[in-house]
Image 1: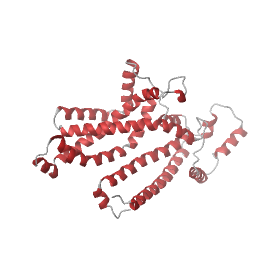
Image 2 (image 1 turned 180 degrees about the horizontal axis):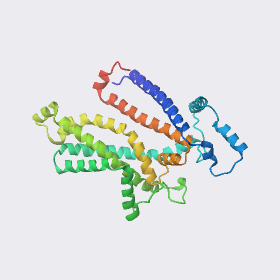
Image 3 (image 1 turned 180 degrees about the vertical axis):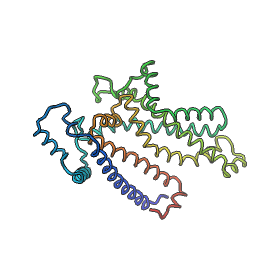
Image 4 (image 1 turned 90 degrees about the vertical axis):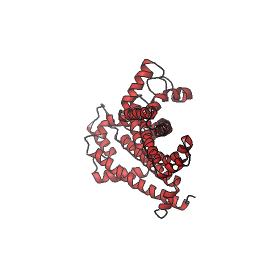
Length: 331
C-alpha cells in the first residue's frame, strides 16, 4: 500500500522545489526584461502625446527610475502577494487575463493530450505486436513524418484543407463573429475546437507511438516474455499479460513529461487558428511588449510544466511497487 507519510514528504519536497524554481525564473525573467530596450511607460501610453510632467509621473508610478535591486525586491514582493501587475494591452490585472485565457486553453490542451496519449499508445502496441508487417511500417512512417514536421505547418495544412477548401470547419476563433461567448452553444464551441485539437493530437501521437513500439519490442525479447511464450501463451493474451503491463508505466511517464511540448505547440496552434487562449496571449504580449503579461505567462508556463513532471514522477512511484520499495528511505 501507498505510504501516505512518505507521499506527504514527497509532495512537500516538490512544493519546495517549485517555490525555489519560481523565484529563480522570476528573477532571471525580470533581469532579461530590464536589460532589454523595452520602455514599459512608452508602451503603455502608445502613440499618445503627454507632457514631460505626466511622463515623469508615469515613470515614478511604474518605478522606472528606481535602482535594479529595488525593482527586483518590489517585483518579488508583489509576486508574493499574487500581484502580477496590470496588462498594458488589456488594461486589466494580469491574473484576470491569464485566468480567462488559460481556461480557454485548458480544454484544448487536455483533449489533445488525452487523445494523443490513448491513440499513440494503441498504435505503438499495434506496431510492436505486428513487428515487421505493413502495419508496423505504416505506423513508423507516419510517426517519422509527423515527428519531423513543424506544428504550425500541420496546422496550416489542416486549415487550408478542412476549413478553406472543404469548409467543414470555421477558419478560427473560439466563438462565431458577432456572438458573445456566453451565448455560444456547446456544439458551436466544440465545432471550432476540433481542428486545433486534431492538430495537437496528430503531432503528439508520433512520439508516444514510437516510444511504445520500441519498449514493446524490447520487452518481447526479454526472458520472462520468451518463457511465457514457450509455455503456450500467444497472441493478444501474451501481449496483454506480459507486454502492456510492463510498457504502460514508461508510456504514462513520457506522456506527462510532454507538457512542455504541449504548451509550446499550443502557442503555435492558437496563433494559426486565432484561438483566444494563453498561447495567443503570449504571442501578443511578446509582439506588443506587454511586459507584465509576458512575465505572468512565463510563470504560469513554469508551473504547468513542473506540475506535469511532478505528476509523472508521482504516478511512477505509485504504480510500480518495486520503485516504491527501492526508494523507501528517500523522502
